[in-house]
Image (cartoon, rainbow, N blue to C red; front, side, top):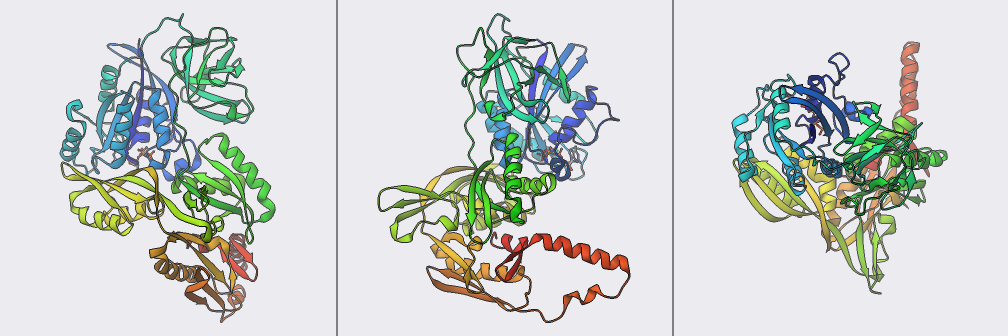
Length: 592
Ligand code: GTP
């Protein structure tokens, strides 16, 4: 069969989306004129930030002297927050192009994604990208690749996704090395793996599928094997890259099925679709369930928008099954939602979308992880915010989540990286050399991984070190709650959970950060941080001295209008608490 199903895997920013663009051009799927940069990144935030969040499949046709081919490419995200999307994509493929950035060499996600590809028994096709860049070091990248792939090493194709150099060669290699899907007779009952789902405002829920046997024809009723939900598709087809309806889809194809469901939750990603009349006996191996790593309580800046916030989150959940929500409330911030995210980038993207697409500006309080406590009664409880910290007199042991972290760094930054890991309570598990790179395995508290490791690692290694992590379990840790008092009243949203030995330093840092972030008010605002009723740090925000509105007078009218506009915008982001006004930045101060 002349079908090739493959994916591109790499570390973030290695150039996957750029390569996908070149492949679309080369195969004439999209003309150069129609090509907007990074076509498969369709979400505006993805495009703006140059990151891929959702996987995107596309079907391309290609002819070469050996024949005509149908190439199904599934573009995948590179950031660790969205790793589960890669896992899903790979199950729909027979091969993966392993793309390495020649200016950076092998990076943490290169290894993590390679591991995923091997677990699925995919053919790995290495390529080294950015050879046009003066910063590229092809021989170092090749050596690292050699030690990484060991016996599976094959010579990488050297390409520039930017200029298009050798991209045609890479395509030839894919056609040669990517195994075609296993052929099966059309008598076999249909088995289609649902690897993604999206919600379309007019068509309803759409399933992205890869057929492993059998076929789909018009007007034939189908059903989901595990949930037994039946439906007759309103439309099915392939992505080229927009939806293109087809009369039939057969084994090996990648495409979509419009289910007609108004509720996307009826599509369980990982389920198998089969025929209603002649069902497949065994379903395809599904997916592991993904759980959020980080929780954040978010509140609308305008309390009357609470229901809009709920609606907006429900809409976002339609296309993002990894988001979890649960109502929460706070004495000072009112009604809000505790949202579970995959990581901080995910949290940032979602809050940005709430504001931009749904016009619901929110205040997010310091992100936390899922802590646990063994109580004296023998019961174990979970809590993920300082406000739900269990009564210390009832607690036997508190536990905090840890992650296994893989860091890859060039040798010259090894000392700095190890120092950093030690400072955030990391325990070194393993260290291996990969040519001039070092791979370090650490056990580090998840909260540190999420809130500080990423940025600090980038800064101590000038951007050269990279990381990947997985939750490894809960370990005993002496946790305490730090409470913040503003103007002598407890201000619960600023409270945080930390380990006892760091409480003093954290309290000092927190009060300092809050002092910087809280603007001067009409009166003095004392900031106090307390541990178990005892004040352990304090700062004061002094009152105004001069009239800030003075600069509104005089000057020309447009300038005045601009200033007023600016003030209005600023106001929107400020929230009044009792007598104190706080900007969103104050809430972020508790983060670092
Ligand atoms: P994620 O989707 O976020 O995982 O990133 P990606 O791997 O898709 O990377 P993307 O295609 O967005 O490229 C990242 C950056 O590298 C962009 O600024 C590209 O312009 C640049 N880039 C990609 N390929 C090349 C290349 O061959 N040469 C040079 N010099 N730059 C490249």
